[in-house]
Image 1: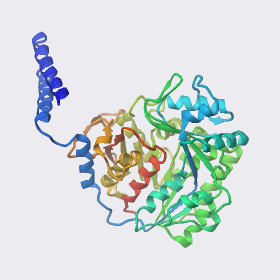
Image 2: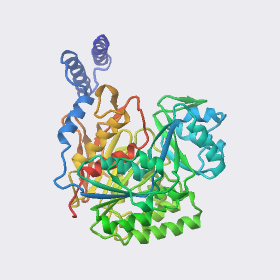
Image 3: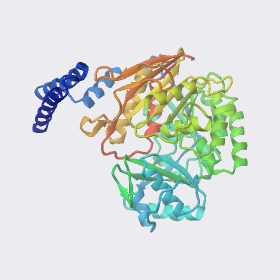
Image 4: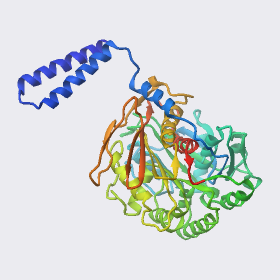
Length: 491
């Protein structure tokens, strides 16, 4: 209370001093400062809810179930066991010392692992890499398993999305992926796993987490995130894709959720091209009344991304989920809007993001694209963009995705206003390529909506967990939650 009183006094003194020294200052500026003073003063005397609490309450009122929900959802194809451990702790246990950070597309040694981990830790950005040396990976895995803080969780985008979807009691979920005994034990009992997906050994992925402010050598993490790596051959070859597609006739889902294409980066270029082509041919046989959602993940190979965008996958899907790293790599690979941008600086600019989303929904240059919905999620905010006439209940969908992000990161069943904070802009331009409008967020209207060229955008902030318990799987939970509250008008 005393701190707020001091702030109010300092602001009042500042307003008076500015007016005395600069009598010609525009009235609008003085009015803005005065209104800020009045706002602070009123907060001092009125014990109202915080903005975080008000936003969470407003979301709860906006999040309503769709009039029709998905009865059956088939999910595939990457599934594994995540071994979650402190990244710095594991690298220290391996005897590695921080050197200069550098990004490696494929990891072939512990030194390359350390350099790439540091590269992304310094940026507070998530990334995923294939570790090519099987013997070295086994040694790292054993060291990680012996770490006192190591934990085992359901892993893989498909399995994580299946877990979230299965939390809805009225939805039947089928998961096709390489499911070993440990993963089968961890999965929700309501998830159906066909016998052809069961295997004797699990695939393990190592998740190196770090906290905001954590240091390793000269590296300093601006935000909490994680670095993922594996030597995963089953998921890399997408061995369960045919099992998934052959199950559709008997299971008869309304929605097919597909992920794991990024795992093909572990294959040789020739095998990768061949497998992607086989996957595209198989997907083209999916009945058109089954909508397909594709969940992207961290990628580094531009040829693979271009193959997905153009002739092979994007023309077949209806919905897409991705984060800021994947969005930027997508536009860079296809020479799309803002492709000259090398990296995001802080919170991704909303106008730039919406320009790229609009381009994606315009077909990204591919013929006959069915893509009508994109769910973009970053730490500070979410946007769902849809082509008009195809999707409903997207205000609820984007709010539900943001709500689960704040709750799950804090390992809490609901939003705890004292444990979260806003990092999102509350006022922003909706485009950086053309004359645009300014959108605003308030406690009473936490979802901003605007339209452009037959595309409608829904934006809402995220209440970021101050001390996240676990960052892995947030994107998958977000996309799954958004799908749970989405209603397709095409069915």
